[in-house]
Length: 114
Length: 111
Image (cartoon, rainbow over all chains, first blue to last red; front, side, top):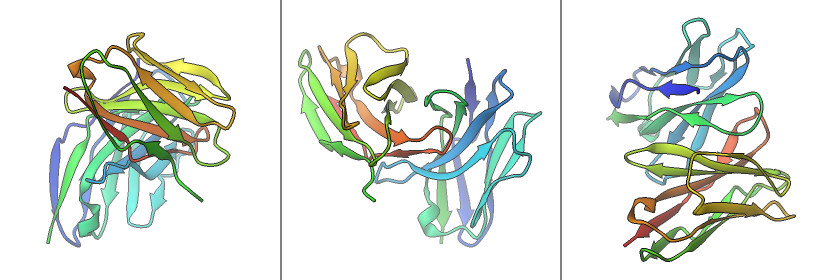
């Protein structure tokens, strides 16, 4: 079974600084999808960024980018120019190419200090 | 376009009762998935419905069931509620591989 591990339960960053959240996963599949979701206190899970495993290029979305290392099964999220609104719980998630089941990591609580 | 709508937002039930939660997906999305979120177990997949058929099921007891209607709206039912069923229940809709949009969830408290 696939597993997703986020080894940092909590992280903090100063406003305008850069922070990297770690995620590792285990799978025997060669093609799959990886996601980062953000869950603020409002509880709604918000998609931050997605990566298709067969694409070598790291995904980027404005201030958010990933470092996808397929061989190492690592998928870290970099947040540049951190803003107060980035404070939330961040979840890494894995999905096989078929079906819609997402396997989530334990989450990393990010605090942004003014 | 409207997002994923879950109702009700909060619910308090007594042990032994049953509960039904509702989820309306984004228009055009035929896939609806349900997740349970608890502090101890994190986010766990319950089941997925696609075109009114259950396509995938997580490792939950038979007390947890669901269905999907022809308009893609989905309901989740939990019978014989236990204290451990207290959780945030999240619904997601989407298209395969494109990421999934979640609703704001239903907070269920069993007393």
